[in-house]
Length: 288
Length: 288
DNA sequence: CGCTGATTTGAATTAGATCAACGATGGTGG
DNA sequence: CCACCATCGTTGATCTAATTCAAATCAGCG
Image (tube, rainbow over all chains, first blue to last red; front, side, top):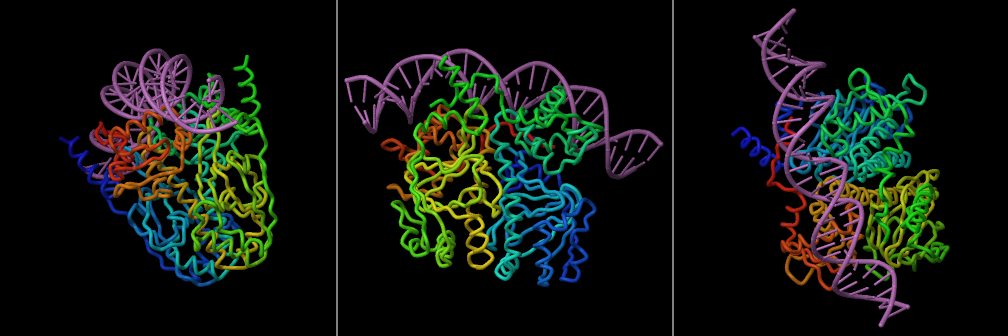
């Protein structure tokens, strides 16, 4: 009976583009602080995250500074872990700029599974990346950690773009950064085997969020990611990730320290693992 | 022995980011016509493809008209089916605008397989979508049919963007169009079963390239795609596509007429097929 | 007419999803 | 402070779909 109810919920939920997981996980509604900010306020707001703030001269910073100088109206919101920023069907009239914290965008697919399509930390745009106000969101976005997000109406951005070439180029760069991540996601999803996908993911994460580890050449990924989160990023399952992680650990390519601290020991070898599903096998495929 | 040679070639080829298939398929070098064009020339060049020309007011047309009016120097090249536009490692200093014909971008992965990451007809940008001149290509691009491509240095585009807000917005739209396609590719790759992926692909193609078929509500896809090409678009194999096509045909969702003319009979049903790997089954997954 | 490449079919194999079960962990509320 | 509960990490057994391999038919083209 419980099972049936669960199914029913999931079915109904799907109708409105929400997975059952969604519903279960967030019984309480997001608590959001609204801060209507004008130029003066913004000056004190940007780049002061608890975590590593956006680089002082990143494209995003330049863009937001542009907005600031023009004295446009924007909204900063704070989210707590698990809070939803938007979900499919919501208006896509704004762009969202991450100021601090971590946010992920994801889609649901198949039977109640979710695939993380973007993982942002401390900076980055999200939302539907265009300047048309009409559309609707086609994916979910939620805060992973405490996060500060700046919401800007697209008309405002378009107005700024028309006005300032610098802002235009800055916006470009911001979008392009996201584009590159999207490309990496492709590379990831193409790989057949879970180990390959995982290896590739770890390399990507290492490149974007990695810190110098104790050992020379080793990279530390200190995001506290669970196996489930990793699974969602490579379109697989907890169990499969578990096994793959163990495999990589046994091969000495990675190491996991005091729960969740992933260290990439041998990056070149990891790359190999990521590329070749198995370079060893047959390889007569695609001979045309 | 032959087999060994084939392996060796493929191995060596991979080192320079070229699949063996690549090498085998194009024994002759691409023959390319260079047409250095200035403003006056361009006026007579744009939008006169053999195929359906870009809409007179598409973002791309506006953008190119902008270039034209500024009298900037661009290059139009013609490619024959199978000719390579660029491959990984080539400079990414230019943007490529498709004027007529069909072009695809693809990556190689696993053991000599290729995945089509973009499929453009009559219009669209390709190349590394940013305005930095330094990088290198990370994928292949080849002409599928006879094609005319306009090559524009990124510095030229950047210069135009700084100069003209309209051009800036037009470039934006052009990029955004590609972004949407990329998103669709994600949706595609996430699906587990081949039938789902294929159904989704056909729907996408129908939406982008479909024509009204004889029957009401039916959509005709007349691109002359082979099963292999379809397979490359959904990261699968010829055989699997064959079977999936038959399955869809038996269910009366699609029809194939005189070789390669695909007709989507029942679009709504096809959507169902695309969404639910199988809505019927277990569905206890991801219950957290 | 004989080629090459495309399509179709079938059989064998395999990777991974699914399902179940258990100890460990960490946070919550009493 | 402790009991409780949810989630996490791990393992193993089962099952399914898709790749791989092999082979035969068909279509179009020089």
